[in-house]
Each structure stands twice: as C-alpha cells, then as structure tokens.
Image (cartoon, rainbow, N blue to C red):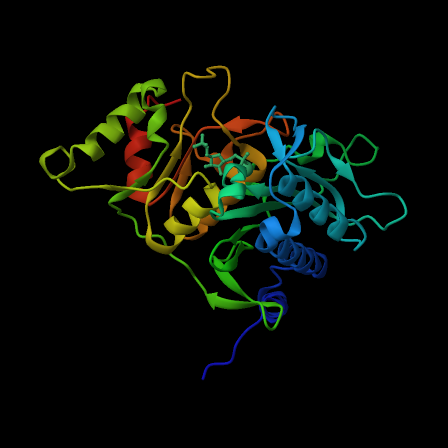
Amino acid sequence: MAQKISLTRYLVEQQRADGLIPGQLRLLLEVVARACKSISQAVNKGALGGVLGSAESENVQGEIQKKLDIIANEVLIEANEWGGHLAAMASEEMDSIHLVPNRYPQGEYLLLFDPLDGSSNIDVNVSIGTIFSVLRKPENGHGQGVQESDFLQAGSKQVAAGYCIYGPQTTLVLTVGNGVAMFTLDREQGSFMLTQEDIKIPADTKEFAINMSNMRHWDAPVKRYIDECLAGKEGPRGKDFNMRWIASMVADVHRILMRGGVFMYPWDKREPEKAGKLRLMYEANPMSWLVEQAGGAATNGRQRILDIAPTKLHERVAVVLGSKNEVERLTGYHDPL
Ligand code: AHM
Ligand code: MG
C-alpha cells in the first residue's frame, strides 16, 4: 500500500523540494489547519455544543452573525496570534485589521479569512467552510506598524490560499502556487492526510451554479448566458445543462474542483452600488487562485479577478469562476473594460 502523507510531511517536502514554503509560511499553514480542525469539532457538535443559532450581532457588512461565525473567528485569531509567523490578520467578521499583540514576536505574513463561509447553511446542517488567503507584509514606507493599506494587494500577490470544507468529510484544499492539493481529516489520527494532488478542472462543463431567484435583477450578459444554458439541446449551446446551488461558496467551488462547472455571483440590480455580494480579498481572491492553479479561470465578467487592485479591505466583487471555456464565454458576452 502506498505510504500515507500527512499535511505536515507534505509541507516539509514542499519546503525542501523547491523552497516554495519558507519556514514561517509552513508554520502558518500548520496553524491554520489546526484551527480548522478545531472549527470542525465545533461544527460537528452542532446543537449538542450549543453553537447553533444567531449571536444577535452585526458584522461590518451589515449581516447578522451566527454564533459559529464568531467562534470560528476567535479560534483563528487565538491560534495565529502567538506563533511569530504573522504581522496581522483581517476577517470578514472584523471591521478593521487585527494586529499581533506586542507581547508576541511579529512575523512577515498577513492572513485574511472568512472564518465560516456559507453562514445561512450553519443551522440546517449543510456544508460550510473556512476560506483563507496569505500575503507577504510589504516593506512599507510609512514607518509605522502594519496598516490596512498593507493588505490592499492584488490576488496575484498571494503566497498561499485555501479553504477547509466542513461537510460529510472535513477537507482542506491548498495552493502555494504549484498546483492544488487536497487533504482529508482523519479523525482517529487527528491529522489531515493527502488524498488528491494536482487537481484539474475540466475546461468544458454542463453544470452551472447561480442563485436563479435573482434572475430578474441580472445584467444582459448573465441573462443571455443562463438563457442559452436553459435552452438545452435545442438552443445555441446544443447540449443540456444541469444546475447546482448550495449557497456555500466553499461547497460550490469544491464541487467544481472535483468535477468541473461554472460558479457565478454576478453584480445585480438589488444593490447597484455594490460590485457584487462576495468579498474580494478573503473569498474571491483565494478561490480564484485555487481555480486558476487547477487550470480553470476566474473573472468579474470583464477582468481577471487576481489582477484587481483592491481599494478597501471589505471590497466586493462580481465572480465568475470554474471551467475555463465557460468562464471565457460569459466574460466574452460582456463589453470589454
Ligand atoms: P457569507 O460569507 O456571509 O456566508 O456569504 C457568502 C455566501 C457564499 O458562500 C454563497 O455563495 C453566497 O453567500 C450565497 O448567497 P445567496 O444566499 O444570496 O444565494
Ligand atoms: Mg463568506
């Protein structure tokens, strides 16, 4: 039987092989994985752990927080504060950045996360997940400690990105820029074990994911694309399409990494001043990099997501990602920038 490879061993071997993972980054990824294990335990306990339901507070996006949103956020902060690998963190659940307290050594990385994505699925026992993105702290000219502006780097500057999905299995999916690897949590051993390497998304698909209830609010290119899919064999695409919408981006992206598909959360007329629902820095950027590393594509309809220069921490963005040929088709339906 082939030898099983733990996440720890995988990271050590990556560090040795091509230096893609410096020591501090390896420690960071181990700590994030440990935090995800602990979030997975809380998610698993559900009602028995008293973790379900609303926390009756609001985050900076004006969304009601669930108890597990707050628990997951605290787990990630506490796990990452003291190891010396980070300079600061940012989260969907915190208005502003969280600096590593002075009593701990400062590291050279910045960590961004959506501690528990798919919040509307928490109380109904449907897959949810943690999404994370790692940037290097820039050499800043402002001569002060880390500031929010230090986080405002394009997604192409990420040095690691991934997610952990809490579903029938707990699975960590990771890239450090040389492909996408997947690790499944072995609960008896307490470790993430490598279960798939070099994941590839097929360029073509017959499956799309979009919240169809928003159809009347979409822009013409998105309407056209979906209308053509719905027309099936008799329509211009000449094939029947299937639809999935889990309402947890982690679960929808995971399916796309496993078997292809296209995921869309486009701009819509409900809140025209917002570019989209999803957040650029800790949702769209890490997912876009994973998808590109798996041979797929990710745009906001007009532009490659990883090229967008962010202007604020909680910036929103329209998202089209997944199988390359479908993403290119829908992007082609939009007017160029
Ligand atoms: P969240 O981070 O507050 O959970 O919101 C993001 C989620 C995504 O996971 C998912 O794709 C989307 O919101 C679902 O939105 P909707 O309920 O509008 O379909
Ligand atoms: Mg989210």
